[in-house]
Length: 51
Image (cartoon, rainbow, N blue to C red; front, side):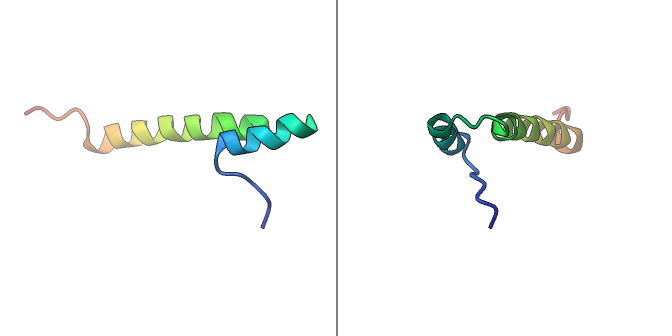
């Protein structure tokens, strides 16, 4: 619908060919920030339990 690529490497190729770098931060920072946030949430809910 919007033409967005979910894979950062897939977004990099067309940006390289067209020299359009305006939204590349979304494709590289977004997944890293989402993974970091998911790790924090997982750790808060399930982590650090004594055995």
